[in-house]
Image (tube, rainbow, N blue to C red; front, side, top):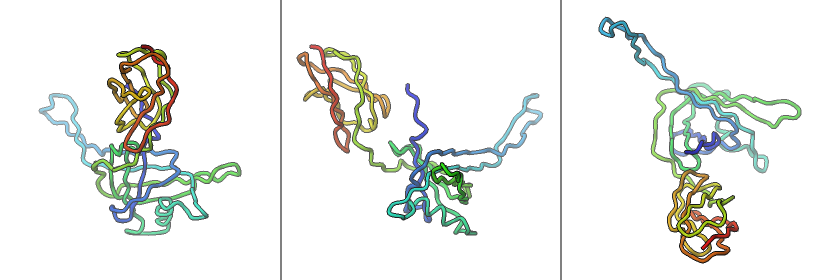
Length: 230
């Protein structure tokens, strides 16, 4: 079991809930769902307290560096900034969040937006804090299609593993892996443990150099050197 990284989430915004743009430069994302609860204790709870949820509220706080390209503000940040002086519908955006590696854990809702600078010191990078206050339900939605970069392989251990033995491969972008090779030969089998770890079984072959590569739908990783046993 591995521990996931906080930075795996992506935040998109939209004016209509259909055409979304990503907020780029996010360095902190903190979503919250809070309950309003009422005491439901009664005679038949036999002296034990009982509680019911009567209301839910959701919110999300996003801190992001202000990014520009050729002097043009990042489109996602601009959508949020454009709500700053507005009222009514113009002060609201649709918000969609999900795992940027897999598209899973996707949720969507409409929110009132506040947009303010969060860093302004002489040595600071320009940063803003965007607060989304839910206006209605936050819903689980279907996985969001994402383009996963090709795999990156960083290490493989232990060195010198022989046919049938396991090798742990670490790196990035291992979600959706379609193949693992030792040299030109496919691994006897492999298990994707997480987006950063694969356990592969060394195939039959002779001892010597057998560079390791990992492939997904986007492409094949650069190889890393590996010396296998017989």
